[in-house]
Image 1 (tube, helix red, strand yellow):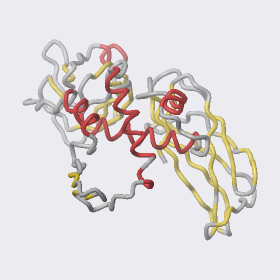
Image 2: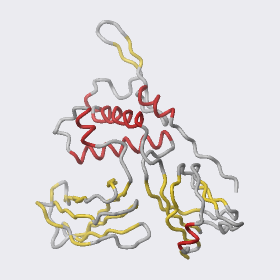
Image 3: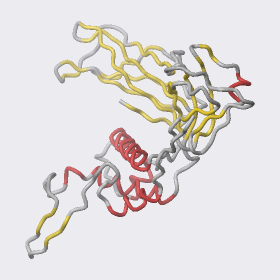
Length: 282
């Protein structure tokens, strides 16, 4: 499961173990292994037992954008079980949960955890449709060396390069700091230096995306959240393209697609912020 956490924030994760859909305690301690994507430890330990089959673990707050894997491991039902969560330390959210709950009059029956999951769904959809991220995020990615001074990340609004390794050898901090970044996602080396030619030989850690989302995108995201939460309440069949009402009126539905949510007010905003990746000819 993906969990997004604001940097420097304290957060306690929870995990449940089940056997045939029944909550089941582990036979002994449940260990939690927290690692960065490069494999370094980010604050591992032992989970607390909260109730039947339910365990919790407090993460060490992160001061920088990052992505961690969190592995819950224990003996459950006679077998060693390892379950993984992915925690993304981000710089902001598309909108706050409390403001969304207040503005949309979301009832208390919708849990905070469920609301957070739905927000991630809305954020991912907006980013996929617009091909641009609206809040600061971190990425660790492997590239093919171009043999030129340019390396395309296919990410817009690259903010900073944090680390580089070539053929398994990490670069020194001055070499990393010398890499130029651009809004269209190209990393450039200075003074006629090149990105060594190769296949999957370069790993780059970088931060990207906007400083904060535009206000109309935040509003559109909350409108989309309302529709996501209300999906099960619609009386219109899932496959319908149009429907008629008792007074004889016929209504044609706006349908979703790869680049549309199906909500005209939301799609109009997302269309204005669509930024296709730029090709890099190295």
